[in-house]
Amino acid sequence: MPDSSPGSTASTARPSRRTVLAATAGVTSVLAAGGTVHAATGAHRPDDRKLRALVSRMTLEEKVGQLFVMRVYGHSATDPDQADIDANLSETGVRTAAELVAKYRVGGIIYFAWAHNTRDPHQIADLSNGIQKASLGLPRGLPVLISTDQEHGIVARVGEPATLLPGAMSVGAGGSRSDARNLGRVAGRELRALGIRQNYSPVADVNVNPANPVIGVRSFGADPDAVAGLVAAEVRGYESSGVAATAKHFPGHGDTITDSHEDLPTIHHTREQWEELDAPPFRAAIAAGIDSIMTAHIVVPALDGAEDPATLSHPILTGILREELGYDGVVVTDSLGMEGVRTKYGDDRVPVLALKAGVDQLLNPPSLDVAWNAVLQAVRDGELTEARLDESILRVLRLKARLGLFDDPYVSHAGVDRVVGTRSHLAAADRIAEHGTTLLVNEGGLLPLSRRRTPKVLVVGADPASPSGTTGPPTGTLADALTELGFTATALSTGTAPSAATVAKAVAAAADADAVVVGTYNVTASSSQKTLVEQLLATGKPVVAVAIRNPYDVAHLPGVRAYLASYSWTDVELRAAARAIAGKVRPRGSLPVPVQRADDPTAVLYPVGHGLTYWHR
Image (tube, rainbow, N blue to C red; front, side):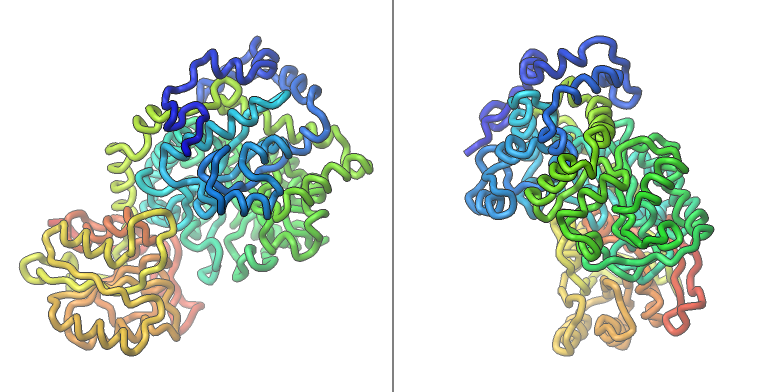
């Protein structure tokens, strides 16, 4: 059944100004007079006296709720599928998003694809409208700040037909601040049209550790100054679209071999190293007017001798971020369901300690009931003061006001159709991807391939699951793109760990091809992907390899005569790689990270800035 909220398929007309004002009566009346205009959005920005008046009317329970940003299952705010109702009942004791807002008065909701929040653009808009209608219909109801992780590249929650842009390392390889700003502008415009006003991007971590399992290609690169410039540019792009950007993960998650989803990493940088390597992108984001900063579940002993996770560290969040860096915007935790923040303290202590450390928004606790009641009890017991909560609520309300949520929290299908997945946005994504495609090796001028000399192309390789709602799989995407460019290309998926039989099948298929393109994915010294590539090389056929995630793969396959890095296996980056292989465009990217030798990790095989090119046909 369709959601009957404003803008739903049942009533696609955009709610009138009168409707919005009626829904926000009591809120807008407090905010109506004396507002100033926010440069980025044109939204009214009321002064703090009016926001404080709103806070003063809230009950303690409502204040606690405003601090939380929570997941909820379902495509509709009021009528989700039964499986999603069951999941909500199991996790939060409510049936729907509307009931979640009514019970806990949460200030924010985060969308996930796996929670079935993001099926298609019209549905997302309807869900956003339904959430706003549910919240604004409550006594002293406030608009909800809806957020998601739309980093692009390998982390995105909203898929096609929305525009999917290259990931950060691809943008870093392009090195263009104009591209980074344009990415933020395009991504922000589309998210805002869907009712999503806060995006947990860009990643401001400097990826100085090739073994980093959690950041990697989500980072712009390994050079702090280059990363800082691109972070600031992307932030300004989001600002221009009226969406809050979020720099993450403070104080810097770039040098770790531990995934904070699974354990608590320790960063062993000295204070001087932190200033040199980790701090510059966050300083640049703050200078660019960043609206929110996300914390990291990491231990940095040089910054906090108590070795608490940064999310729970007063010396890091208040001492450094607030006082030293002068940041007074919203601080949001990374997900409180991650093991990194749960290893030292219980789930009832984590939200309280985070607030004491200086956090404003508590994101996605494993049990909202436990976390919500723990904060409530901490105030009643005197461990947290109500004034401390008011500080964070005021920051959150300021952000909601700047984003225009008090003026008009709703979106429409017509607005979606005007903005989401437009031809100009898709063309911008293609251009940005082309600028990042990096040619690492091209011995003997093997590339570009010629449609006359090598008309039949076999595409083999890894086919990891699509990370962001693209069509995939990678081998199929590459083969289709090459066919559109005039080749006769066929795809054969060989996986990330091909068996001997799979390798033999690929070698046999290569006999009928004029050239082979192989997609590699996180190759290691013991990977059977090496065996696949080596046996394909032994056929004597021209072999072109494309690193579809980390560019470090090239160090493990020295026999390959032509190697490209796409930095992600999303369609936009793979199609750009195909255009480079075919000579439709020339490769323009350069490595934003160094590639070490496989036999001697202390030696650099290809430095930052390495990148070859050729004139396109």
